[in-house]
Amino acid sequence: MSLFDWGIFGPNEFVGMDNYRSLVGDDRFWRAMRATFSFALIYVPLIVCVSLLIAVLLHRKLPGIEIFRTAFVLPIVINVAVAAIAIQWTIDPEIGILNRILTSIGLPGQAWLSQPGWALFAISLVTMWINSGFMIVIFLTGLENIPDELYEAARLDGSTSLQDLLYITVPLLKPITLLVTVLSLIHAFQVFGEVLIMTEGGPYGSTTVLTLLLYEEGFKKFALGRAAAIGTVITLIIAALSFIQFRVFREQ
Amino acid sequence: MKSVWSLRWLILFVIAAFWILPLAAVILYSFAPNTDIVLGRLLPSTLTLENYAAVLTQDVRGVSISGAIINSAIIMVIQVVGILLLDIPAAYAFARVRFPGQDLLFYTILISMMMPGILELISLYDLMANIGLVDTLAGVILPGLPRVIGIFLLRQFFRGLPKELEEAARIDGASDFQIFQRVMVPLAAPAITTLTIITALYSWNNFLWPLVITNSPGSMPVPVAIAYLNTDVRAVQGYTTVLAASFLTCLPMIILFLVAQRWIISGMRPTSGIK
Image 1: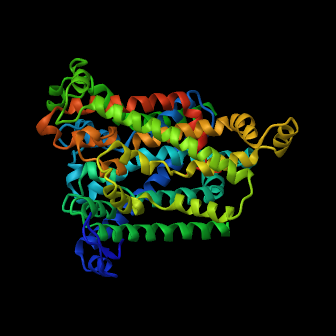
Image 2: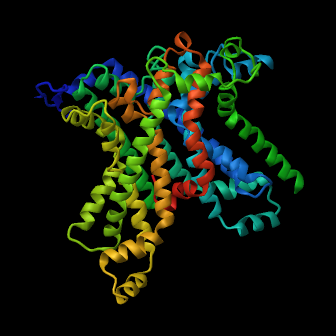
C-alpha cells in the first residue's frame, strides 16, 4: 500500500516510490524521526537502569517482599489511557501533587508537559511506569539463575554489597540486560497512546513521534498510502534492531 | 546484617511509595469533590461517592462509561473464547502432529508475531472500511483473533508433555480427538490459564486499534472512552469524574492481577516465550 496513492474507497493509483520521496522531502518526517530517537535515548537507559535497580532490591528475601513486588508489577495491568491521565495529573503544573510537594519543600515547580525537553521525559516516565513491571520480572528471572555460591565465595573474600553488584550481578546479567534493552527499544519505537493523551505531539511538535505522525496522516488526513510508508519505515527500524539482537545473542 | 536489611527495606519502601503515588492519588481523589482539585488541596476535604454516581448514571459528552464497560466486556469475552478455540488445537497440531509444510507454516506464524502492530494498522483499517465494519464492535474484535502468541506458548507446553501419556491412552482405545480432549487439554490447564488471563488483559487494555476503528462514543471500549473523556476535561467536566471513571474501569484488571498474579508473572518470564 505504501507504493500507492491510497484513499479509502478512492481510486488507488500506483505511484511507485512517491510516498517515500515525499516523506524524505518533508520536514515533519525528519522532526518526527528525531523525536522518536530522542525518546528512545531517554526512555531505554531509564527503564533498563530503574528496572535493574528495583529487581536487585527485590531479589532477596525481606519482610513484606511480596507486597513490594506486587506494587512494582501492578502498573502493567493499568491501561495506557488511565496511566497517562494519572501521571499527567500528578505532574500538572497547577493542580498536580508533584509540584505541590516540590514547592512545599522549596524547589521550583515545573510546567513539565509544556517544555520540549521535559515533555519527552514525562512521556518516558509514563511508558516506564507501565512497562517496567515486565522488565523487572525478566531481571528477577535472570537474578535467580545466578548461583548463590558466587556471592558466598565473594563474601568470604571480603567483598561488599556494592562490589557484589558491580563485579558479580551486572556482568552475569549481561544477556538479560541486552534482552531488556532490545525489548525496550522496540517498545520505544512504538510509543503512541502516552503521547496522544499527554501532549498530542506538542509543544511545538517536539513529541510528535513517528507513530503519531502515522496516525495523523492516516486517520486525520486519510492519506493511507503515506501512512503505510511511515509504518514501513518504523517496521524497518524495528527489524534492524531485532536483527542486531539475534546477532548479539548468537555470539553469547 | 540486620542494618543492611533495613536499609534495603527503606529504599524499597520509598521507591514503592513513589511508584504507587499516581494510582493512589487517582483512587483517593476519585472520592473527592471536584472543587478540592481546583483549589489545589493536597488531601480531599471530604469523601463522596458522587463522582461514581455521575459516571455510572450520566453520559459525559455522549460517552456512557457503563456502556464502554459493556463494550469492553463483550470484546474481551469473544476474544478470549475465540483465541482459546483457535490457539489450543493449532498449538497441539504444531507440537504433536506431523504434516507437510509444518515448519514453514510455523515460521510464518512466528514472523507475523514479531511484526509490529503498527505495520498492519493501515491495511487492516482499509480492509475493515471495505467490508463496512468501521465503528462496530465486530471491527474491534475480529483483527484481535489471529493473535498467535498463544500458539507459541502452548506449543512449548504440549511439547514438554511425555509421549508415553499419548501411547498409554491409545492402548486404552482412545481416538486422536479423545487423546487431545481428555488427556492433553486438561494437562495443559496451567498454560491455558496463563493464556486466558494474558489475553483478557490485552483485550481490556488494548488502545491503538480500538482508537482507530471506533469513532462514535457508543462503540468505544474502555481505554478509548477514557481518553476521549480526558480531552478538554477542564472545560467540560470535573477532573474527579474522569478519575472515578479511570479507577472504575481499571478495577476489574487490578482484581484479576491480585488474584492471578502468579499466572501473569509466569507468563511474562522469558523462558515461557511470551513477547
